[in-house]
Image 1: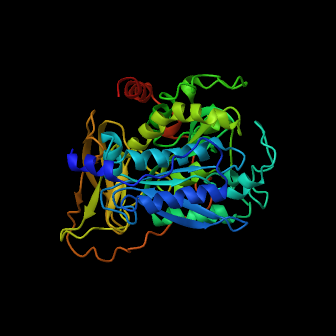
Image 2 (image 1 turned 60 degrees about the vertical axis):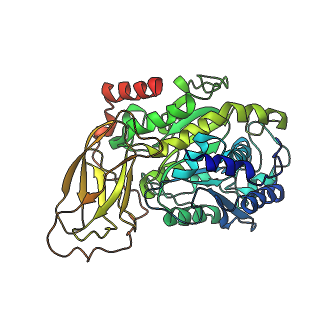
Image 3 (image 1 turned 45 degrees about the vertical axis):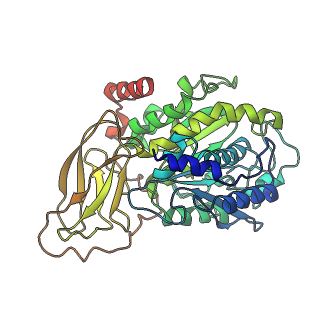
Amino acid sequence: MDFACLWLGLLLPLVAALDFSYHHQEDMEAFLKSVAQNYTSITHLHSIGKSVKGRNLWVLVVGRSPKEHRIGIPEFKYVANMHGDETVGRELLLHLIDYLVTSDGKDLEITNLINNTRIHIMPSMNPDGFENVKKPDCFYSNGRENDNFYDLNRNFPDAFEFNNETRQPETVAVMEWLKTETFVLSANLHGGALVASYPFDNGVPATGTLHSRSLTPDDDVFQYLANTYASRNPNMKGDQCKSKMNFPNGVTNGYSWYPLKGGMQDYNYVWAQCFEITLELSCCKYPREEKLPSFWNHNKASLIEYMKQVHLGVKGQVFDQNGNPLPNVIVEVQDRKHICPYKTNKFGEYYLLLLPGSYTLNVTVPGHNPYLTKVIIPKKSQDFSALKKDILIPFRGQLDSIPVSNPPCPLIPLYSNLPSHSAATKPSLFLFLVTLFHILFK
């Protein structure tokens, strides 16, 4: 590492120390603006929209090029406080921001993470709900919903059944935000349990619901991601909340826990090409302030390690024979196709989160036959970078008719007409052992 970066870190301006208390909208905005003003080279603060009551939905971006995407640099995001009365995640993300910016140039791991990742952090998706809580409660408060009394985590389009809920301003803002970035990995932070829950939250027989689960084509990766977070949190071990549900190793499939229509993590995976899990981080939804330091201590390592997983697998660009990047090209692993195909962005980039192993990539240019190419993901990946594999399409003739825009899949129940059998419903012992190996020996 360049030691000049370390010296630079010692000279950076300091933000006033962030205390362990609940920060209401005015205080949160003041902190975020202070960070953005004092760390201009690595942060960018912007609002993706407004809540029902007109409060800003703030996002702070942390990265070496915070204002714009850099080719080859994956986009990561954390979102908290969808339910206004679930407050721990909101404060954890504020402290995560503080930790990232104050560690840049001083801590090698954090500096490398910022150098090679563009990190988007939204501390509160439901600021109205948070402000509406007048009497904090461990189980339920009147601030759970937004100001129109809608549950935001039941408000997204659903891939399995029609969701007729009126789309709320906060939901629309997030959906539009997802169109502007090439998000690769994400987590949304909740409270009321201690578990890392992975997709699908809803399902049909084709995804395994007859077996009380609903699995994605990338189930091995999702199990690994959920275990990555839970294994580093000392509280995510079994039934810490003394509920009727027991979560082995602090992990569960969302549908196995309880079916949920209109959730955000399924929407991210199906329509935004972004792997997202849900992190339930506290038995009590709105714990006392004096508990906040322990929540930070228990989650800090998990929050950092989970962000690093955005560098799993393989990434690259797709080019024509003239070296022009090709947008809107389907790039997927041959035996794990998505119901809404994953495509290259406007820069011709693709990102696929994969565990170590041998895969065949299916590259499909509109109007042409698929092009197959093999890739081997090594057991020990490069530090802070997925395996880089650019793909040159060996087609003759003109490829300039490919549309630059990426026409989205329709926001309808895409899974509703699938047959009731799928590879996703048959998780193999091999996948289980691979996942366990990576948790124990990473």
